[in-house]
Amino acid sequence: MHRVRTACLLAVLWLGAMVLPGHGARADAFADLASPQLAAVTAAISTLATSDDPQAGAALLALGERSLFAAPDGNVYIRHGESVVEARTGQPVASVPEGLKPIRLNNRIRTALAGAQAGRELLAPQPATRLRAADALYARHDPAMLPVVEHALAVEKDATVRTRLTEVRAATILGQPPAPDALAPRLEAVRALAAAGGPEARGILAALAQSDAEAPALRHEAQAAVSRIDWHLRAWGVAQNAFYGLSYGSVLLLAATGLAITFGVMGVINMAHGEMMMIGAYVTWMVQQAIRATVPALEPVVILVAIPVAFVVCGALGIVIERGLIRFLYGRPLETLLATWGLSLILQQAVRSIFGPTNIAVQTPGWLSGSVAVGGMDITLNRLAILVFAGLVLGGLMLVLRRTPLGLQMRAVTQNRRMAALMGIRTPRVDALAFGLGAGLAGLAGVAVSQIDNVSPNLGQSYIIDSFMVVVFGGVGNLWGTLAAALALGMGGKVLEPTIGAVSAKIAILVLVILYIQRHPRGMFPVRGRGVES
Image (cartoon, rainbow, N blue to C red; front, side):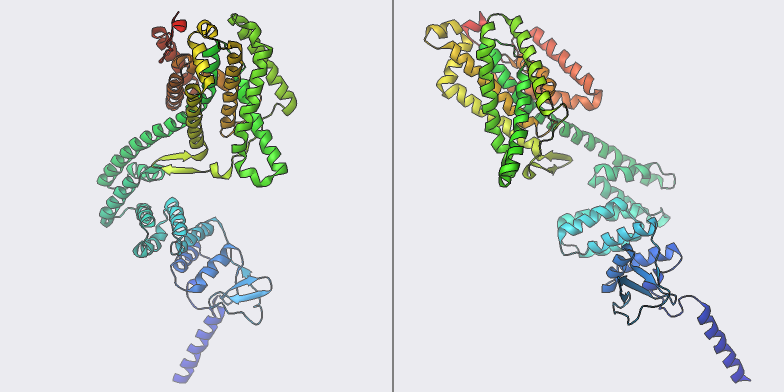
């Protein structure tokens, strides 16, 4: 009788094993990848992500590539073409098992896989890879990855990666549901995120501050942290806008120095000055196309080649304009203004007919692309290069005006044209060279603008009004005044724009300049001289 009961029990167990799915598979994380329960699959992914098993990474990678298959007996296999290996051991199988089905992959599993991949990269030998993985986990702050993060934090030696991992751990802890016995670590996590700052930390803390499920002490701490982060973000935002204003002011400086010379030396209101900028930008594009077609090896330094070419082309064109048009209109400012305005329209239409009305792109060299993070600011390299370039041009121009015979003659003509002529200075020649120098400087401004703005026939119109305002505000013919006015107007406009809007900022700046000119008609740095003062 006993033997009969034992035989029956064994038969029931055997039958049960035969009818249950996965009867031939071992109960481990590999087998759970084929589970119909999503929670079991995501838990298996997290387990494999923290596993030291070398096959764990291969299985997760195969799952992401949809090359992980499950057999009817519950075993999982990795299939690449005709070759099939067992996922658990990595050993190839002699024959492909019957009934292999791909393991399903949906958005929830993809999210878990992405987090697992980042978790495995936290242990990579390269610090850059670990830092990138930490950034990815910081954005997810998935509570399931907390063991992975803590394990990586325990073995991390690099200070930068360790700091980031501390922030990741804090964000991950706060991503968990609140518990009565977890208040202390959650408060510590809030303080860690408050110290980290940034929009991501602010978003996490703001959600905590508004959550009724959190303890009052934690909500108060989170609200205080949000206030501190907001203050820092506003301060860095003002600094960022000030940097943009500096780069814009540098472009205005390049454009206005040429205008200051022609207006200061010759008294000519050159409405075509913006078109000289536009031609300088198109010359930059033409130089880039020519080098790309003939000497591609020089393409990284094309911007350096375009600088002297644009200066010479625009300078020569300026001399031709002065000799062919401006010199007949000296002493008649209204006619000069109308003539140069008409010339600007002709130049715009000529460029539009040759190159077309649409924008063209001047490619920025690789060494001028990208940015450098300074605190909460992004210092873009192309704008930083424009700032340095404007400083070099201004220094070179001052050297020309103060250390060369041409500069001496120009300053003499500026201060007293009649006396300079009586001293033997050929004022018509000085006028032509001064106009050419101003047009060449506008061409350099066009080279700079091509790196941060679209190049089109209307490019000059965007800068001509601000350039005239810089010349008048700084003091006609004074380069120091031009420098101060360009930076003040550029930074003032960019700092005001986020608060009152772009149009309102321009109106406010214009009103302030008009009020200042009412009290100081000669600008911030008026030119001294008997001829000028008379």
